[in-house]
Amino acid sequence: AARATFEETTWLLWNGALPTARELESFRVTLVAARTLSPAIITLLRDCARKAIDPMDALRIAVGTISLDVAAAVGGNADAGAAAAIVARCPTIVAAFWRLRRGLEPIAPRSDLDHAANFLYMLTGDAPDPGRVRDARSRRDLQTTDAGRLKGMPGPLITQYQLRMRFGGVDNM
Image (cartoon, rainbow, N blue to C red; front, side, top):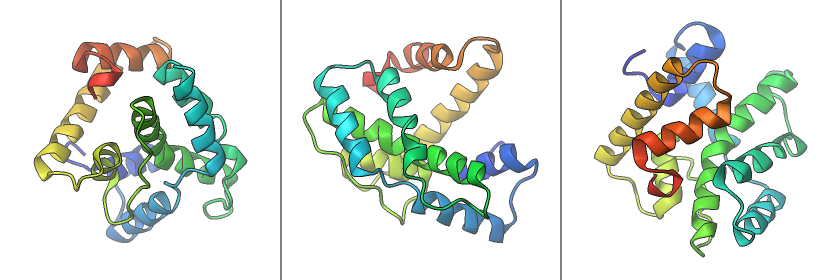
């Protein structure tokens, strides 16, 4: 799993084994279908940006609303549907809020890009350079390593610590 994609790693954590090719493709389709934010979440993020809410608070607020518009559960399991929606939408939320804080409009996710490439695309609007996608994946690996060392710290504190230590803060991502 050391060279696994985000999608493969998520599947591994949820299911205890790496996915088969068919499972991975099905999971990717599920995540892609759940990436788009509702207009209500975009409005909420606009309000957060206008009021200069802390990025971690804006993420927490927006994630808390995801269950309001999860239309269909995965395989009849409401928890799996909500979990997939959270995993799929968090990068969209972060990218949208990042752009809104800078006076830019959010960019809709693309269905032809994997999780990391799509996140970079939503930040810039440009097709991501494969080297930059590789760097983003490396940063994720560093964050995962840090999280293992920081067991016991509340989740938001770990994330804020990691962002400050690795990248100088949220604005430098």
